[in-house]
Length: 460
Image (cartoon, rainbow, N blue to C red; front, side, top):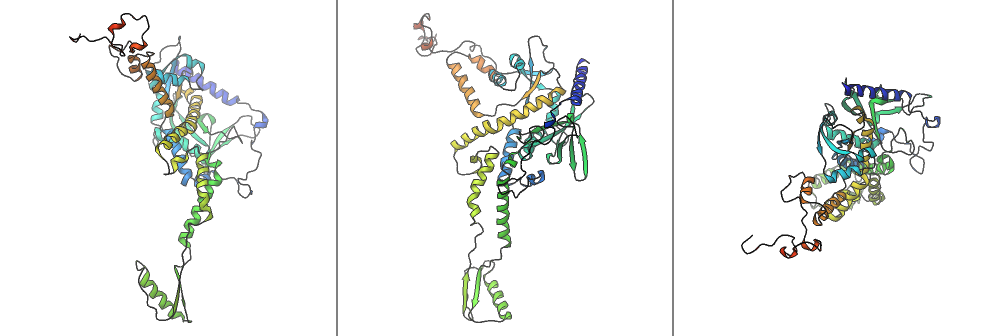
């Protein structure tokens, strides 16, 4: 009952805040971008629409966007609870964290000092976890995270529609097609967003801001409502690739260049010309290449060689591909076969650290701000994703090895970090004799270099 009242009070506070706040200066109420809408130096092209951006979701742009979306979906956020000294133990099912995971969580920049100073545990069973596992009748957890990142990569924004149940918590999450959603503000309103308009064809629907979670990438042109997608940043390059491939395909399918030109020495009539053309095609088409032809009269045959790939644009294709990959923060080594294992490993480290990790941080902070308050008004719960950078994991393993070697950690402490049961002989650090103190008693009874007792002739 107390939890129900706490959630009801929290919803009322959020409702009042949405009615009165945020109050923003009038100069921030309109569009923030006052520059040109052209996208190239010649000012010939207008800004692309969301549907036009979706139309360019192919070739290198699709590859880069799908890589980022799939990798982010492979690192779903985990739910944690912090317990301070005077707070009661959590009532949900939890498990203790090993030292490495605890240190990783406390190093997160968005974690508050309250969480960093408290005892952290991972939550294993909670209504929020059930919601994220079974998002709605059409999507599962992986679909949710992948589509969320996918829309941000292509359009800069992703929108969740929350279905709030009778207990005041979400019962389902629906991914809205971002190309159909627009944040709207009423005239003379001092709020950032008054409602979200969803338009499909002639149909239009309004959603309250409290029912929408808006994920977006930063856009310096409008830092409050819009999102700048990587595809929008490399729009000219993506359109250039599409135009080149369309031209190449059309040239291949529609070119009117014959293979040979037959020129008779004398003028012939239309019937004779059609007879010679039919005879030529019947003899040499469909696997007849290489046969001999004995002409009835003097003929001059000119062989034409055409190439649809020998274009100046082809030389720029590699550079355009690199520009698109740079916009999505995807290493070029992922998109070419001319690489080796060392370059791929270095590229993976770079991709995880420079592209995936910031995206996960942005996603987790948005969930902590707008989704977690539905379940925990006290602020003890928070979500965080696993560190995706392989280099950081390798450092942790090396540090553990050094700590074990020099007696900083015991074998049982290492086994506890790995989730293994302790052993009777693992509570004391194992050190070589060379690392024993100079006043160590009876050093002669120890086997040199091992730290273990000598074994006599009888095996004792």
